[in-house]
Length: 199
Image (cartoon, rainbow, N blue to C red; front, side, top):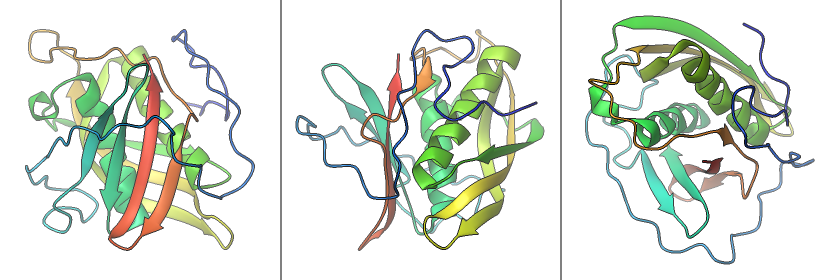
């Protein structure tokens, strides 16, 4: 399945993705960003990207008057990509309701970490919209590197199942992943990413 081009509108969603940034510099802090509600995810997943037991805080949901998003955390960029995927899936349906019955290899590309993250998450959203696929476990098998920005290509082994409305109550209908206040940075505690979605 071909990947959507960067900055493209989601094929089945009404939300447009804004133009992506030109550099790898972090975006400025959101001036109205409130203190988010922390959503802890304590279940340790098997077959992940080395996340189990290494990072207590994997992701948290950001609640705002006009937006909804999440932050992902990890000890490495690979962990952040995996945890951001878990956060997106958990934003749509309760993550614990997804059974890892089937596997799929998913590829994504981007010219920097931020665009790679947006394209990676939009690819997951595309598979949900077109195939009804939900994923719970993510193992990053390859992360391309470039000296100026780091990872610009991604290969992930994902495990999950087909959406079943009787077992997967839909929490939020996500239309697209946006570049609004996108952030991917290294901190004193590890790595951190922030994503807002179009609903």
